[in-house]
Every structure is written in C-alpha cells, then in structure tokens.
Length: 336
Ligand SMILES: NC(=O)c1ccc[n+]([C@@H]2O[C@H](COP(=O)([O-])OP(=O)(O)OC[C@H]3O[C@@H](n4cnc5c(N)ncnc54)[C@H](O)[C@@H]3O)[C@@H](O)[C@H]2O)c1
Image 1 (tube, rainbow, N blue to C red):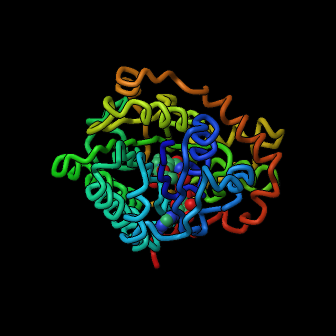
Image 2: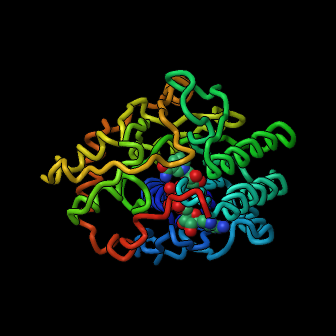
C-alpha cells in the first residue's frame, strides 16, 4: 500500500484531488495535513473517506511546523503539496502570512523530503501560472520569464524557485506543476467564478475589475486532478521538470460573467464595472505542448462545458456555500 501525503487537502483543489485519488487508487493511504484556515472546509472530504481509518488520516496542523511535517513525510511515498494562502486580492493588504505559508511551508516540506530521500519517491510541488505575470509571448511555455505581479505571486515564485534549487542542490525527486486558472466544485466564493455564480443566483451585481478585460486560461479542477494523477504515475518522466497544466483556452472575465448570466437566465445588466485591481495579470494562455509531449495529456473539457457543470454544482449545493457568502467580496484596497 502506497502512502500519499497531501498538504492543504481541505481546500478547493486539495479536496478534489483527495476524492479523485482515493477513488481511483484503492491500494493507497492518504495523510491530509491542513490548518483549516478560512479557505478550508473539512466537509469537502466526504464521510465515506473520513470514516475509513485504514486509508485516510487527517492531521490538523501547520505546514510551517518542521517537526510535524517531518513526521508525516517520514511515512510518505508521495508528497503533493497544495497548502498555501491562495487569494491574490487578500495578498494586497495582508501579505505576511502568504510569505510564511507559501515560502516557509514549502521550505519545511522540501527539507523533510531531503531528510527522507530514501523513502520519498516523488514530491509534487503545486506552483501557479501567476509566477509568470502577464504573457510576454503567446502561448506561455515553461521557459516564460517569471515576473510575479502580486505579493501572492511573489510568494509562490519564491516557493517555486526554492524547490528548483533543492532539485539542483540536493537532487530531491521533485516536480514543479504550474496550474493555470482553476474552477469547479468546492471553490471558495472569494474566487471569481463561484462569486459570479452565487451573485447571479442572488440577483446581485457581478463586479468586474477594470471592466473584466483580463483574459485567463481556464482548466476544470477534475481535469487538473487527472493530470496530477498521470504525473504521479510517471515519476521518471517528471522528476526535475516543470510543467504548465492549462487548457490553452482563453476567456475574459467579462465573457465569463455573460456566460453565467445567460445560463441562469439573468439579465446582462447585472454586470458592473469597478476599478481595476492592482497587481492584475492581463493575459495568461498556457502552452500545452510539454504536458502533451511528455505525459500524453489530452485537452480537458471545453470551458463552456466545465462552466455549466460548475454552475449546476453551485445551484445544487447552496448548503455548502451559504455559510461563506459573507466572505465573497474581500476588500481589494492596496492602501492599509
Ligand atoms: N485555485 C487556483 O486557480 C490555483 C491555480 C494555480 C495554482 N493554485 C495553487 O494550488 C494550491 C491549492 O489552491 P486552492 O485554490 O485549493 O487553495 P485554497 O485556498 O482553496 O486551499 C488552501 C488550503 O491550504 C490550507 N492551508 C493554508 N495555510 C496552511 C498552513 N499554514 N498549514 C496547513 N494548511 C494550510 C487551507 O486550510 C486550505 O485547506 C495552492 O498552492 C495554490 O497556490 C491554485
């Protein structure tokens, strides 16, 4: 039985990944280390998984705690490190915790992997496309310069390069994955897609920073989980490598608002322009060549299909999101 340590497994992507991996690998045991910050929800892990003590353990704790991380990595064959502060807008006015968690948390995980190199087969570091800043070339390959434009992106770039330096210095068996924009079930309402969906359902304005002209590359979370699963099953092809996991399909924030309103039968007049957000990336579009060439990854769902699935999930799961509705509009001021 393989043991996989997941950090941040009660958040959006981590919980989707745990559900995916648990169901497809009946021979695995999952250790989930999570601090249960405002972004987490323990219920994202279904009872059928939580109740199976043979195959699932939850560890409440901080990824920055080296002793705790060491003790868990010591038991792991595979480490998938999601834990992070993840919201760009919040990093504009309270960013110390971003550098603590995103950089020092990665430091703790990477050091534990060095210490337990005889045990760990693969360390999957979850970075982000935000490390690139706005696209200088289209599409953006893994060689695109790193120009982080927000404190969140800078913290993630620090973590990304920390892992790279450990690959070079200590030869740890790590891979760096840079997902582009994610959307799907269980995403916190502070993020744009669920905020638009739930605002539309309530008949409230859909606020578009800078008119919603920012264009991003959108990948449905289940398609990301499948790619991660594929990468984990091919350690010899991914160790020492960086991969973009994106769709190559770009959609503007303005168009997303229109698609959400259209699907829910709400008027386009709910779209409201507000001032642009500092540190905003104007354009992200992923090259999918390397992931396709090395891992045989195929395109995921078309964006419109994934968006409809996501809208339907929020329509059917109001119980899940209504308790965090009050958090859907974080302060985006850069003056504090
Ligand atoms: N959501 C996206 O569009 C996106 C895109 C690219 C990359 N990423 C990266 O993917 C990862 C997961 O993102 P997400 O959207 O699921 O984030 P999220 O905010 O939904 O979840 C983060 C999880 O990490 C946990 N956590 C936070 N600080 C912790 C700490 N100190 N110790 C232990 N656990 C802690 C939280 O409790 C939460 O469960 C992050 O590393 C993020 O940078 C996200």
